[in-house]
Every structure is written in C-alpha cells, then in structure tokens.
Length: 466
Image: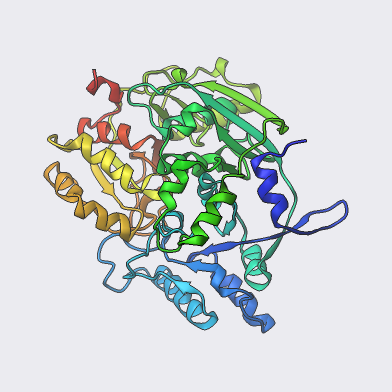
C-alpha cells in the first residue's frame, strides 16, 4: 500500500517506537526565539548538560522586539531581558543567533525559508504554534512546548504520538481578488477552528499547486488555526526554484542529490487518508473574520450569520463573540468603519505581501481615520522592499515601512491596538485581546487590507477591480 507525504517523512525520522505509545522522532532543525527558550536553557543548566547538536538549532528574536528604533536599547524591561537572555544563551551553548542588527534577523518563520534553512523532507520544531508554516516545503513542522524545546536541545529527539492524516483538495481557478489567505480562511470557516484536531493536513489540488511558495506558506501557517497539528504541501518545481541559491541550501552535487530525493516526497496514488475534504476554488471569495476565533469567517460581501445558523454547541461562543466585537447577527460587515490596519506577521509579512499592498495603494492615499502598521517579516524583506522602492510607494500613500518583528500580531511588544478599536489584520489570530486588551481583530488578506486602508471602512476589494 502506498504512503502519504506525511507518512514518508514521519517514517524516515522514527528512531524507535514505544509499544502502544509514542514514537521517538529525530528532529532535523529546531528554531528558537526569546520567549519560549529561556526556561529550556535554564533546564539544561540545572542538569549540567549542553546542547547536543547546536548546529541544528537556529535562533532569532522576534516576538518582543520593537519595530521602530531597533538600534536603540529596548525600552520595555521584560522584553529587553528576554532578548538579552537569548543572546547570552546562544553564546554560552554555541547556537547560531541572528540577533537584532543582524542582516538575517526577523520573524523566525520568515527567516527559516528565506535563508534556505527550511528544506523538504525535514522535521522542524519551534516553541511557537505557527511552526506549521514550514510544512509548505513538504516538511513535518509543528509547534512544541518549553519542556519539549529543552528535550530537543538535549537530545535532538522528541517523543510524539503519530497523528491522523487529512487531505484537503482545492481544485479550479481562483477568482479576482482571491488570495491564499482567503483560501485558508474559507477552509477554516467550513470545518471550524477545531475541525482539524488530531490531524496532520495535506493541501493539494490545482488551486494549491498554482500558488507561489510564499502563498503556500500562508496556508500552512494557518493550518494550526483549524486545530491541526500542522499542514503540508508536496514539494515541486516551484519549491525547488524558491530554494535554489539560498544561503543554507545545498550546493553543487549535493543540490542534485537533494532534489532527486525531494521529488519522491508526494502522496502515492494509492495512499490512504483518514479524512478527505474537497472544495471548488470558484466558491472562494475575499474573506474576513467577524468573531473571536479564525473559524468565524465570512465572505466580505456576505452577512454575519444568525443564531439559527449556528450549531447548538457553538451558540454561547457565538453570542459572546458578537458582544465582544460589537456586531449583531445577520448584519452586513461591509461598510463598517475601522481604525487600524496591520500588514505583517509570520502569516503575511513576506515580500510578496508587501508588494501586493504597495501595488494596490500606489497612486492612492491612506484614509484619514486609519492608523497603519506596515511591518516586514525580516531584515531581508525590509532590504528588498527598499531596493524595489516599496518604501517610497508606501510613503507617498501616507504609510510608513517599519522594522521587522512580530509586531501587532500578538501585542507582546510596543505595537498594540487600543481597547474597543477595530483592526483589520493580515495576521493569524483574532482572539480576545490578541492585539491588545479589548482590541477587536478582523483577519483578512494583504489585498483586502490595502483596500480597507485607503477606504477607511470594510470593502470588497473586487469593487476596485471591475
């Protein structure tokens, strides 16, 4: 019997299996940042041991870093301490660090792919749920807890129970104004924020294979938002072309050998999935969330559901979410005024996202009521945006290109949305208080965010395309 992509990569990394228990899985690469690593390193210190294979760990600060004035000392004490502790630990244990000021520093899930650290067929972990991003390359990538971060630092292995597999197939041609962010928000709205629980997902179909690598990363990034352990997309020529020539990618004969192996990483025709879902790309429109989890999404052209349309088990959450968001059941979401727009994060902080936003706002002006946070995902993205003149296009339209970091995705830094105000965000989560205490988050694509930024209210971007 054939194997799924997930099974091929998983089986290649099983060191041993505990009878009627978990597998001991070898981890090819661990990514770390300043928030979930200090306790792990402290655990190593208490036990008097070092990092087993430091060359297989890569560190960069991202969650707590400011996005303005990064050359200056960090003002917030806890943030400064965490970043300094990461630096000290990396120096002590011989771990490669892309620290503040380093030309490769940035959001960890942006840095991994753009440096060629992320490769097909790998197992990748990080103390961050959105590690699933790297699955876009055909790798098994997932977030872990702090105690597991310590376990991987100490052994380069991890005990894991094998999840079930789900195939999500999307075929057809995407319509005007529809992007990969809309695809994944659409899928989550269909299966709910818990619909993928217990599964590792594989996204496939013509609508997926037609996407760029950066668009594929957006989809895998948000696989965790439907409760899944992670998401994957089989590598292909698009993948290989993206990787080739990057700093840590294989070179010469090693490149040829690597590609030959990567070409075997696909689900066999007779592979069996535990669950299969299929969708038509033609049914997907520009999407937006209206509630307090990513599953509460609708088409921008649509209306918020009525209580009768909500499953009985979700009605309490639905009512609570509408109260928090200040919305009413059944009402149209288009036309509502917002005050903030955030472009960035590990979901949509890549160069293609900045290009999309800049191309739309070129020749237009930011609405007077909009406060905007335009944050590149890395120093490399920032440099590329400046080289392409994106910073000037943004400035002419009334926007400012900031410095890289997680920024307003999670408000652990200085970039926060005030209580009660609406923020249209290209990030991945719209939980209560996610972007600041009392902040109200609506998730969208970079293209939709650009249309709203110049309109000052929620609009369907297709109105500008007809």
